[in-house]
Length: 118
Image (cartoon, rainbow, N blue to C red):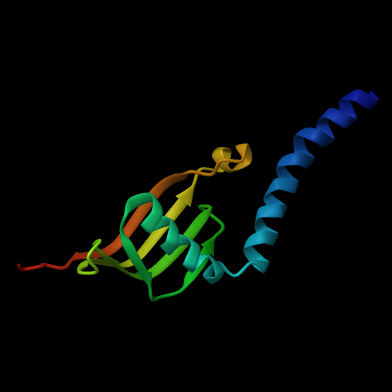
């Protein structure tokens, strides 16, 4: 078999396998809960909403994403706005490989609006 063909085949099979292995190792050894303060801070800076994540954060390998449990959302004045039992944010794999990850799908479970009376 030609050396070029062997190298090409190794590249085509090896690189995606290496990427999946890297993602699996990251998920295995990185605690998702360490990102709570970053998520809460980004919500304030990017959207102007106050998040309080009371539950745990866990990784999801397939589909690739993060599972956020028990989140409270407050408005800019600190008044309760909504609560969500569970969010699964799925990341688009190709955007992750490009170096600019974006959320592909957002699944909400038991999202409750809290009525605010003035």
